[in-house]
Length: 252
Image (cartoon, rainbow, N blue to C red; front, side, top):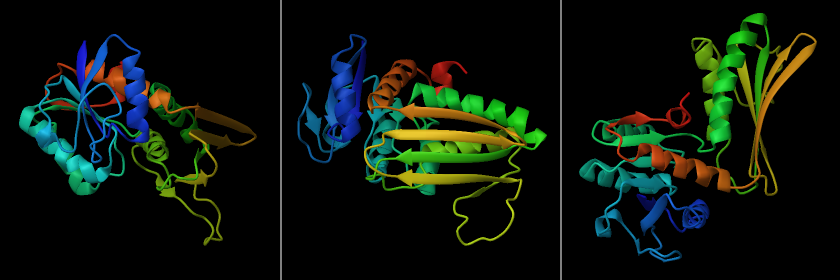
């Protein structure tokens, strides 16, 4: 059984991970770290990693960008592998992630869903096949009204997947409202919709002459992200230092 320290255990995703872990026999949450210090599950909760006494095989992180520095300090000091699910990291923090991966196993992904990570692979293959034939690429993402950032990190990751297939030749356009000009064939348009309780929808549109190909993913609950994070934890436990992704978990 893999022992987990859950960072951000009292957040919305942390509660989902706790509930899912309790229903599984291959993982166990031995401690939580959360700024609130409140205990919600059958494990002790600390306000910082400095207070945490339990040993674990891996840390699963669903906290906030502001809390990532303390997490990286802990993993760098102890060599504990970490599944890093927090998005919106600064450039300085991303550099710290790279440095931490020199001494610890770090798995970082813009989206923990197994389905989304398969979609990234399909988008890359689609771009290779369709972009040279003149297909335009557009991405539309939809999320709930409480989401702060736009576009989503997953939308950017999808754009990056398509762009990498074409040797980075595309640029991204997020807003056309101030432009009155024909669409540049070397752009990827990224649009964001916010409303209601939409968990997450992503459409990658390949628009060609008289035909349309759309690759889509819809999240119906947060549980898919918890499942992906726990599968990543099982994969990462015992791994040597390095930077890993969900593609490694899926074997892609």
